[in-house]
View 1 (tube, protein in one colour):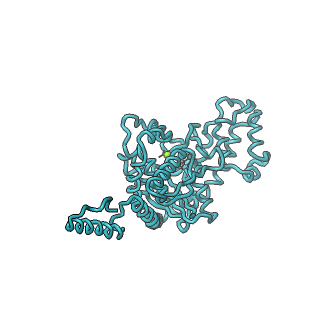
View 2 (cartoon, protein in one colour):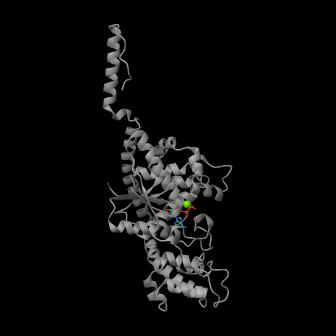
View 3 (tube, helix red, strand yellow):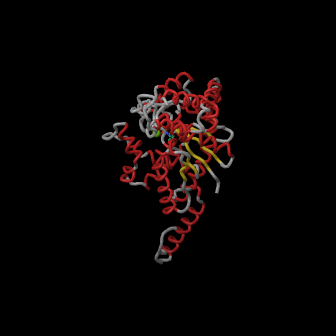
Length: 378
Ligand code: ATP
Ligand code: MG
C-alpha cells in the first residue's frame, strides 16, 4: 500500500514554535527521507472559517503567512503538495456523506472539541459547522487515502474519530477508505508545547507564542521574560523542572551539539537540570542558553522566509499547483466513494442495461397476462 501523508494548519495566524515541534519539523524530516509516496499539506481555511465566520479577512491574509512558514521551514513543493482546503470542493461532498455515519452524541464526546467550545465561549451558540469539523477533518484525511498524519497531541481525538468513520463506511458500503495512523512527536515536550506564559498550550488564540517569523530581538525578549519556577527566587534556591517552561522548551529543542557550542561546562540537559534542582543555577543563565538554541534553529528559517517574501506570486503559484494535484487525488477517492454508496448513476452502464431489461421483461409479461417476475430491478 502506498505511504501517504496528510496534515495541515488553520490559517488563523503565523505559525509558532509549538507548530514546529508538534508537526512541521516532523513533516520536513519525513519529506526528506523520501520514504513517502505522496505528501499533502493543507491550509485549512474552510475549517478556520467555522469559528472565524465573521472575520474572513483574517483567514484570507493568513494563507500566505502559513505558506511562507511552510516554505521557510523546508517543505519543498517538488516533493509535497501544499494546497488550500476550500479549493477542493470534493472535501465538502465527502463531509456531507460522512455526516450520516456519526451521531451528535459522539461529536459531543470529542474532548478537543469540548475544550475548544469552552475556550471560545460557544456553549450556547455553537455554529453547526464548528461542531462538525471533526467530520470534515475525516474527509480531509480520507480523501487523500492518508496512511500517516503527523500532528500534535490535541489532534488525537480527531484521528480516532476519523478511524471510526472509515470503519463504519467500509462496513456499510464495502472496503473503500484507508484507516490512518497518527504520528505524534517523538518527545513529551513537543506533544503540546506550553505557551511562554506557562499556559498548557502555545496557541495563536492565546497570545503566548514565539513565532517562526519573529526577529532575533523579539525572540530574545520573549525568552528572557518567560515563565519559570515561581519558587526559585535566589540563585542558590533549589529549582523545579516540572512545569518550568524554559526546561520544557529545552526538552523540545536542545541537543548535545548545543551544549558543546554554547554551554560546554555541562555535558547535556540532564546535567543542567540536576544543577537547577540542587540550586546554584540562575534562570538568566538557562534562558540565555535557550535563546542561543532557539536562535540557531530559527535563523535559517527566518532567512529563507525573507527570500520567499520577495516573491509572493511564486508562493501563490505553489499553492495553485498544489491545489490542482490535491483535487485530482480527492476526485479519484470521491468517485470510488460514490460508486461504493451506489450514487454513481451516470458512470454505471450496467445500471441502464439491467433496468431496461427489467422493464422490458415486465411489459412482456403483462402482455402475455403473466405476473411480473418477483424481486427488484437489481
Ligand atoms: P488555533 O488556535 O486557531 O486552533 P493552533 O495554534 O491550535 O491554532 P492549529 O492550526 O489548530 O494551531 O494546529 C496545527 C497543528 O499544530 C496541529 O497538528 C496541532 O496539533 C499542532 N499544534 C498546535 N499547537 C501546538 C502546541 N502548542 N504544541 C504542539 N503542537 C501544536
Ligand atoms: Mg487548534
